[in-house]
Picture 1 (spheres, rainbow, N blue to C red):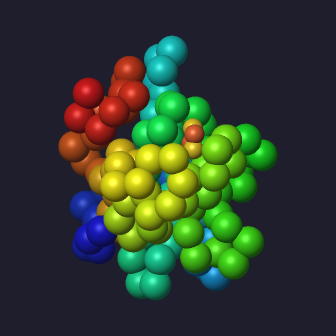
Picture 2: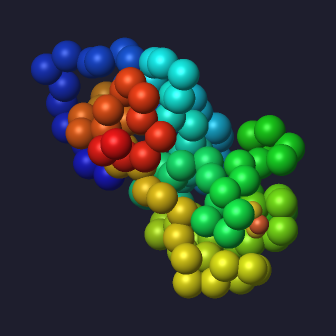
Length: 132
Ligand code: FES
């Protein structure tokens, strides 16, 4: 995550306000155009903001069978509700469940003027993977 003063803000890349993630919350986002917009989750961990594709490395399911519910009850880990894989919020690494050692796919984000934005290098159209 990086933060800098903007020359302009590309509204298509805005995921949410940083303040929407207070309390180390997580939320889903869909961004981009075309038939395959980028579907992800963004989560706050300490002072950092991290985003990942909403796709579990175990079987490719969306992480949130209950829409928008990404975290364990204590809020410390990301939970895939299909088969219970647990992931670190700051790295996306699976630390328990059926795919230990595998990781969520990171989506680059940056914080600009209090807005969490998709990184400039991520394609908006047809993007299912960062840089695709
Ligand atoms: S699809 Fe996520 S744990 Fe199986």
